[in-house]
Image (cartoon, rainbow, N blue to C red):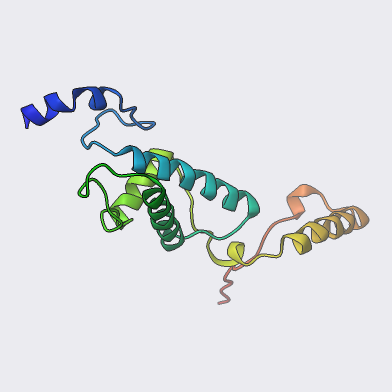
Length: 151
């Protein structure tokens, strides 16, 4: 173990820990680092578009990016990396979220299927309705999915 660490001394020193990480316990290949950087760019673009992202979608894209990088990168040894070496498992996904500080991936319920254009149009209509009837902010509230019990 010590001999292996001494052999890899320079590569271990060159590793930059992710945000919030104080201990580096596993040596990650540069291929994994490149793949995660590209994946993060893709995730950011999808979130800005308002697309729905789930763990399965992200893991599938991670495997695809990894395989693309693997096929375009010349390998020195056959055991260095293979398409089967990266599984994009749940553990990897959880650690990826921690490393990249992603908090919310999946949009739930109505938010995932909402009509953004209709919502923007309704804001204008709703504002006009409030002004026309002279309501004050304390009189406007949301009763969506509120259960009423009568006794």
